[in-house]
Length: 136
Length: 180
Image 1: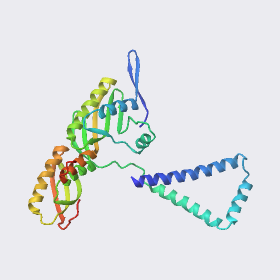
Image 2 (image 1 turned 135 degrees about the horizontal axis):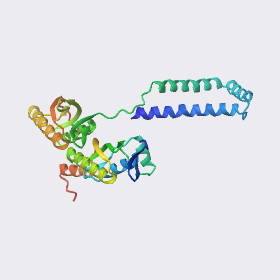
Image 3 (image 1 turned 120 degrees about the vertical axis):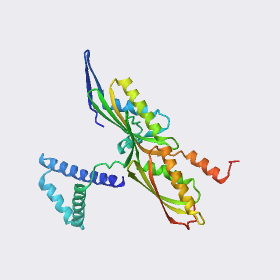
Image 4 (image 1 turned 90 degrees about the horizontal axis):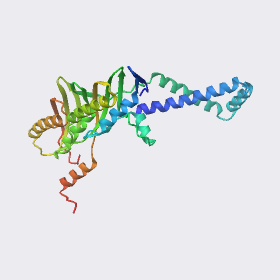
């Protein structure tokens, strides 16, 4: 992600935001939404996390211009949730968080559901039920 | 994905060779190593047993990698996705792979279905799912496929929220006895 800085000129001076700041706010707001398992990033984000650093901008693409911002989020949802409702909740949460924290005008929050996280416990329970084994 | 990693490895090898060549030229240019001495060393390598073959192989590999990289596609192909909806806040789309995974979950719960191959296509007003099924023996196929058609549509529309305009079921085997 380009680490460009955008400035908003105010009467008292200027306020500037780096892309990464906006991406981090969006990423954190998104991950807090119930039903979202994580963000889907590229190979570089994966390598960063392998090295032990948490990449808070993973799966977030920010397009900043003056006071407007467009955000694209690549997310992974939990299995069993209603994806469209989760995605809508994420859109609202990210828009609200960005507008509150940065004062920028959020033009759109585009959500791309890239994958589903299937909890192994759910599968294990189903297998037990199917075989009639109650674990005793 | 594997292809991109392979190309990245080739690129790293080619760049390492280029760095080594540039460093050697730089050292020669600034007098750190005389050209005569380098030529003498190179002649010695070529004169040694199998030296010419080794040099030929290395040069051939570097040239081939160079040509492969010249025509390689570096652009990251984004996974295919389907638009769910466009609202005031922006758009929501779902990757094809996620739709396939959800559909596969639906089939996993039906014990008469032994295996399934899924394809998801974009269609006017939603998506179209093609499921090729291998069924257990002695299954009432018309009843099962009718249930699958309606059930899959409901399942996908509930969990993903994208309209399923068509569900194509192809039964390709009814003799499979093994588990999924």
